[in-house]
Image (cartoon, rainbow, N blue to C red; front, top):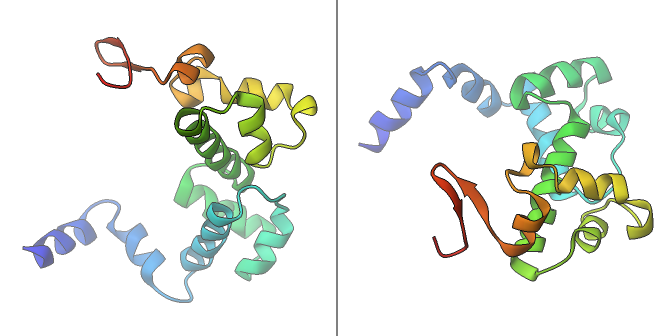
Length: 148
């Protein structure tokens, strides 16, 4: 059964992308190293030049392959990971947006009003600021709380 699932995944439209990631030495594998580094070090400042050097490719090549794998640039991906981490800290630890922004690498809370606003941007997080603080999310049939 497991072999059948793997076979079907590899034969699907996204299978070629998965095979490229799994093959050592491929551009996608090198790009995956940069993606993994961002996931682990999302709170640190990132220079695309440093990521490209780490992946053993040029900046332009890294951008191209990064977009092919993630549908966003390296810095957009870092912001997404930071947003997810901050949202988790707000919901699980009860932090306010400024404190969560600081903890995930956005800098001093006094200087992060624009970044804090991005956290509360409902187009990215699926929540408005008030709902994020209360742990509510808009579902398919309306608003629901933590237990719904």
